[in-house]
Length: 130
Image 1 (cartoon, rainbow, N blue to C red):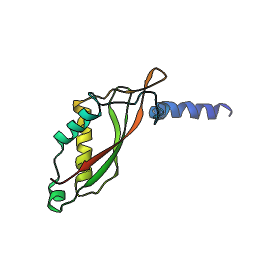
Image 2: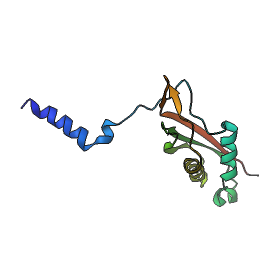
Image 3: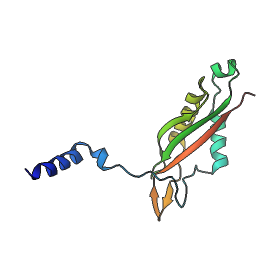
Image 4: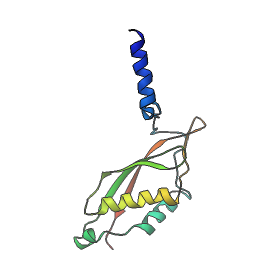
């Protein structure tokens, strides 16, 4: 009977390997992750690829969308989500452009204690009607 809890624990590790592989996502590290070319290159990429949604333009909606994600050890963006945004298609467009970074530009991963680690990142994207 004493072996039953051990068996159940081992079964869970095998049946749900993602639970065993959960890694800590850092918020403060010695070297933060970075877009190739730096912050200026990142915003140039964003504003070159953004398409102002017709619904937002028609209704003269502007504002800031705050996107959250983490950069994994290989430099890919994971768990991309909108924290806050004005809606009207702006949130979805900001997400689309950030996801596009994953296809075209792998980030430089964050470093802590000399190792590549996953690091949380928050990115504000402003939409202004010209």
